[in-house]
Structures are given as C-alpha cells and as structure tokens.
Length: 250
Image 1 (cartoon, rainbow, N blue to C red):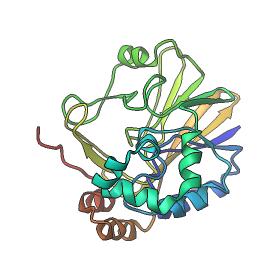
Image 2: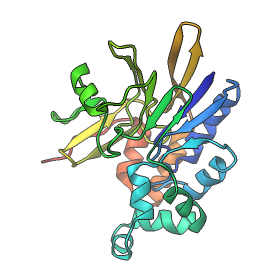
Image 3: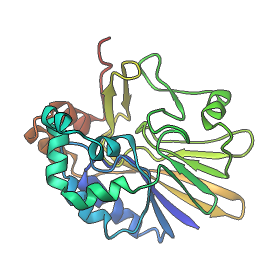
Image 4: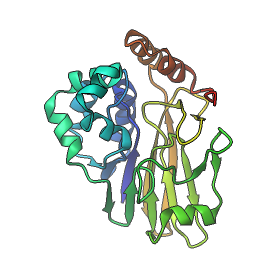
C-alpha cells in the first residue's frame, strides 16, 4: 500500500498542482489531506477545484475552523478571512464543517496537531522560539493512549519522520503551501524550512514494515509571493519566497 500525505496547503494552488503532478507518477492507493486547506491570501477556490476531483481522505485543521466558525465581526476585522470566505463560496465552507478531526486508514491514524487538539504541535517544543524536536517521553505524553503502526500529523509545517522505541512511525509531511511562518501563540515562535519548495510525504507498506519518504517539490513560488502581495500580505510573500521567518517580539 502506498499513501501520499498532504498537509497545510493553505490555498496554494500552484504548489498543490506541482505536488499532484508528482503524486500521479507514484501510483498511490490513497491520498490523505491533514488539514489547514484554504486559509491564506492565495487561491482558495482554485485549490478547492483541484481537491474536489482528488477523493482524498481529509481531516479538519485549526485554520479550517477559523473560516467556518468566523463571526461577522471577525470577518469584518480580518481581511484574509473575508477574502477566503468570499472566494470559496458556501459549498467548500460546508464541506470543511463536516470534516472529522481525526481518522484512520488501514494502519494509519491521522490528526492535524495531536489526537486531542489541532492547536498543539505533536513533535515540536517551541519554548525557545525555534522548533526543537521533543524527546520521546514528551511525544508519548501528547499522544496519550493513542498507539498505531503509523501516526501522521501536520500543523507545524515541519517535515519529520521518526520511529519511537515501540516501533510507532510518526510522520509530518510538512506544508504543501507555506514553508515558513511566525506566530505569537502559545509563545512567540517561528517555523521555517529554509527553502520555498512544497513539502509532502509518501508512505509505503513493505514486507519489512511501513516506510516514509519526505518529498520536496519545486514550483513557481514567486507567483505565489506576488499573489500574497496583491492581497496585502507582505509577511506571507516573504515566507513563500524564502522559507524563512523571524521570531515575533514578545
């Protein structure tokens, strides 16, 4: 069995098109989409048009909730949220609302952040401002009682594949659409891959067990950056061009 993992597309239809082109050559049995699908100053509706033909197994992310739970006041205050809701239209909004928070395919368990929260990073400690890999005890604590052959997650935009001492494989494919960002919650921190490329992963079940390949796909990131600038988001434009971010001031 071969499974393509996508996460954190963030409306970047150009990156998604490039990744889907590579996936088509891999003869995968399934595609899993781990959430944060549309939010951003890019091409939400165009992304929806690509995904609706893909039949991917999909879960909801925290920034999907930000769109379908947005109040009139939040829409009026947040131009990027307003742009997404206007560009998407009703059907994809309602589709997101119906998505599960977690799911399971074969021996693969999927969550956006952790099994209990789409706002918590499963694998990263961000207390320093930069993402550091948690030790195994802390990862297991965030998993709680959850144990599967493979656990896949997104949210941190940081590609990782690691095996716990009990044999559990944990994979974060990274972000298809946004290679870096900064945030102030729960503490000021940044995530950055250092390149503008789209990230995804390929899982394969072999006679020796599950294996993961972390993939990096080049695409026209300059056009994505210009689209972000056209939507008055120079922060996104910088992240898209460089894959780098700065730690916000406290």
